[in-house]
Image (cartoon, rainbow, N blue to C red; front, side):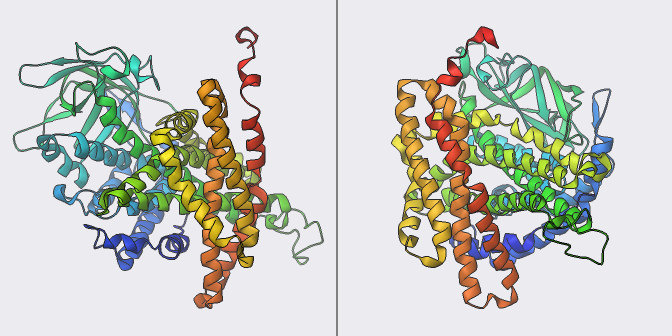
Length: 597
């Protein structure tokens, strides 16, 4: 069976010992983000994830959502769990205090989100999208829209979605056909169909409010003609409560490979009343606020699933006895040794562990940058942090979800035939993980965003936000004998990243296909270097702790260093192959005749 226990010790290591996250309490508005507060959040969110959400994960997958006569019912226990979740104040954790939020750092929300997604990804879809909705409305909505919707959404009694995709278009949103007809009272009548709408209809909240992309009659063609509208399922009455039904209905729900307890809906808008958010014909700018938030969240989903897959595989491998160690029995009094004696099983477990722990450090570091970008009193510090978040977002979304899926795949392999059987739960993690590579922009699109937008942006300014501190770290530690086995491979991989970055920039100017052909490999190479950067810093902290006596926790720090050693020796070398693939260019891809496919 799958198991999950919140990795609180590793979370505290990353937050307090590596990143010193309590420094966020020095930023205006974050004074309450103390060590005690952060640790209490980890403890209480862990209890919620382990004791309330995780027990519903497998039954929710087996039951799925039920659609009847336009109504969606979530699986047994979900409504009660959602009520507990909202009553505990989790949706308000990092939300704006002006609208009922607690105003704590967004980095802390990522921690909670990781635990929720580890325990029950389907459940996490419902409140997760609402937070993205709130961020978009805070940045682009009118004061009246904020006052009408945000308090109830932050309280959790209303929820939100984003409605982009239509039957004829996914990534290419310039092709959308949903119409927005202006009315004399300043509202619009929205007509059209949206598909793949997560949490578009359900029974968890009193109202569901949609952010909908649509075209006005005078809109120019393509992406520049799209506007964004807020369209509630129930129109707010004079007291701000859910009033008359709007022209919004669920036509059906999808029967999916995974996340079966999350309702994925076809939503029909039949002259539904809506209101413009932001400027006319500038809807994509407003929607990208929500999409960028969602892309980071999807990356966290990959991390959450990876952690549960790792814990479950370890539990199975320790318990399952099969064969003997190659160099002789380890437990001769038993009929067989545990799976953990076998090199290939150890390879798989350590691969899973090295990703999860490295990704956690990178995710929380990014979360801190998100907070700095919003709260730091110095404008240059805010800009630097914002640049770094923009650079890292497509990498985190794509690499974390690729590897979250891979962790589930390795978990099945560790469990053998039992991994393939539904009752053991690991195959659900694989099915649930598969969607994360697709939604909020497929991973190939993230790679194109990285090479096509982020690399050239501001004449390479975004890149320098990572390249400069990485170079500084290497220069400061290249003669440190205690760190040499970690700094040297990191430095070599970083040098390759610099070289291919210049190569892509030069070749892409001559032929855009060169950048496109290199994009997926480049994103993966970049991600490996980022994780190496995290790992070498974690080693530095762990070695210092051991030198200081480790306070009775020596085994934790020793395991941290051993995991880093595995990453540097067995995972990071992939960068050499990626380098070779990138430098090979696009000819072998683009010269292949279309007719030959």
